[in-house]
Length: 76
Image (cartoon, rainbow, N blue to C red; front, top):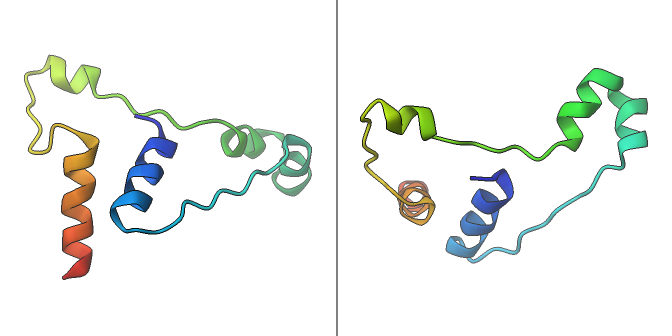
């Protein structure tokens, strides 16, 4: 799952526009230094392959199901 996929689903389920701001790599290096700039300019990717290999089962097998529960909890 990419962090952008999560943001897209969350925006859709909350009926909000997805707003994205891009930070040029050169600006990130000037502001944070070269090491932190690498973290800011990469795409975050989350995987559960190892977790599933242990036999773990998810309560919400899809991103849509999980985000839907978060949105319901926020609505209170």
